[in-house]
Length: 365
Image (tube, rainbow, N blue to C red; front, side, top):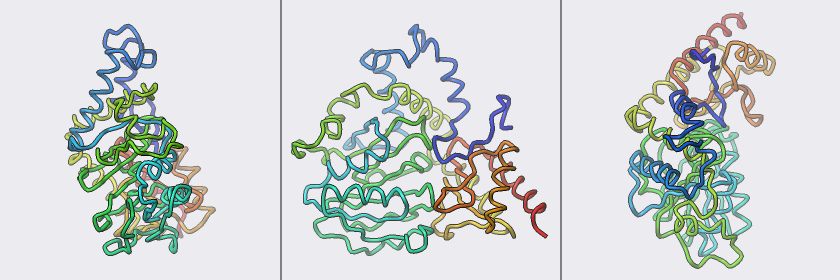
């Protein structure tokens, strides 16, 4: 078990593991947040106490990512699936956008966006079951494209853009849901970033959007629902309606945790070490194999297989009995998947590899 709380090592792709320190703070503040006499779950989002919570969360996030003043930070609801619609509704002016399809979520976004304009698939890795990131250095970018869209880290398939696509001056939009805050990011290279927090930042229910000011519009189509207008949320500091208040509070605690461990440079260093432990084992194993081309490997999501569905099933069952949970791979890849998000301790990865070594010895001739 992971610690004195008898916690398992949770390798879920999301909702995912949170830092124990954050959970302890939330526990201690559950009934009476900072002498307010109530839980954050109970307080008005219009109160001075909560106003400080959400403003501090935004301030800490801006510091972590060094977000320029020319970008707005929004705490929204609806998950990445809603962003698949909000992005084209808000950003399409010429009615044309280019999508790079490198996994299921990018594919879903591409399909959804077609409801709102002419959406071009300018690159894809579907020919090899999304096991690599295509060369995006000289794509056929549409001359009048309003934006170029990517899913930067592919949760299901375990791939990651190591180099951003050459958008030839067009606005870059990135779904960062499964790599958000795992490493430093140059925000100025993007027009819009969005991320569901349930993988690396907090509990399910919060969506963070970082959007450049000049993408906020007053001239959206009259049919656009008010709640799908980025500018409405920006003008109201994410408080146009009741926000996912408690989830934002937890996100704020995670931001503090990240700052306390040394920020995103330190977090990247830790994530590199964790991923190397598992990848190094996979590269030398006679039983387990990774499913992703080496130059496209994600630090966050690592799928692997034995080559035998029977052995895969046995491994998943036995690993769970040993406190290593949620290792079953997505149905489109099969096998196993270990998600090594920020809050997964190095000891968890070491325990996983130790079990894999033992399993390999017991199941190979």
